[in-house]
Length: 189
Image 1 (tube, rainbow, N blue to C red):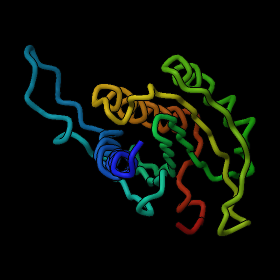
Image 2 (cartoon, helix red, strand yellow):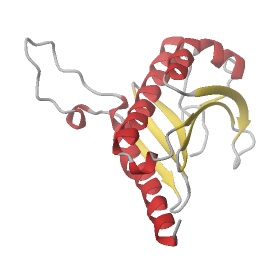
Image 3 (cartoon, rainbow, N blue to C red):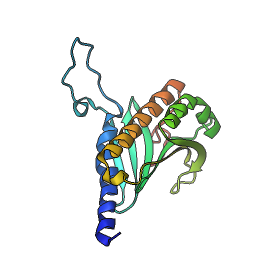
Image 4 (tube, rainbow, N blue to C red):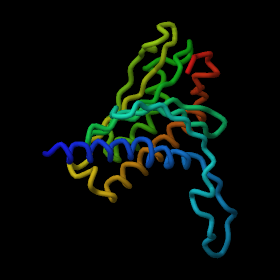
């Protein structure tokens, strides 16, 4: 692979992380139009109502997103190593939330994510910057096809799946009463 091809691949990774995913995550939460006898012309971009903040270093193969939806915030990291994807959801660890309790509460969500091709794991971790800030991290691993960066169709599949996985992670956590917001837990971002 030439230097030019490597640079082009790195630019496509950057575009996926900071362009495609940033825009796609805004549709984690969206307004549904009322039921009608025929399709309505409301586009997803117009209906999207999730807020997304991004932290990324140019040239790095990961980005951190703070997704605001359903009255909650979720800290999410996405790593893209050419065709390997890792999504990490960070939930503030509290007395009522640890890795085992979060895993059991989100079992239904895990089954759906694994059906789509993700491998799921949980662990307890601390913030690299603030050791007293403890998180429960949900790791989601997937391997796309080797032509992922060159295939808009494959990118659409995984981008859409990450959005849906994030949407239902937030909804299931809300249903189970799991607080997600690091800011509400007093963590610095």
